[in-house]
Image 1 (cartoon, rainbow, N blue to C red):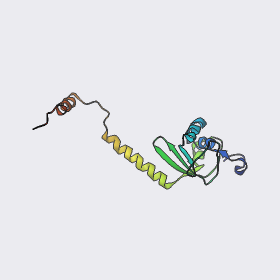
Image 2: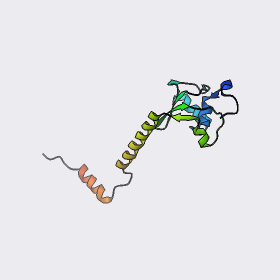
Image 3: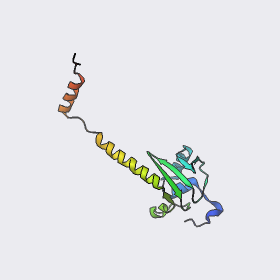
Length: 134
């Protein structure tokens, strides 16, 4: 993907994460690496770590953790279809993210963000101030 040979110089981890469109800016990628949200072959790493094809990355963004295998190198940010060719998400990661998405969707139905009606407020007050029966 890059114009220069991959083995000659490599690509810095922060640049690769930015080019793969996993982070919007290089500074956000740097912050994530420094905070330990990015692991390279199951170890913490530095921003200047050279990425190699076949490496396993674990990237935590928000509540999701994505496990990737590096398929290609690039230090230039291009379109999303080209960026997606730089990595492959593991099947376990896809399944885990899908399960979390379903859990969030189900939990969302349980929580109401609406104010109670006047009748519901009165019922809540009655229930709250009920005296225990002897």
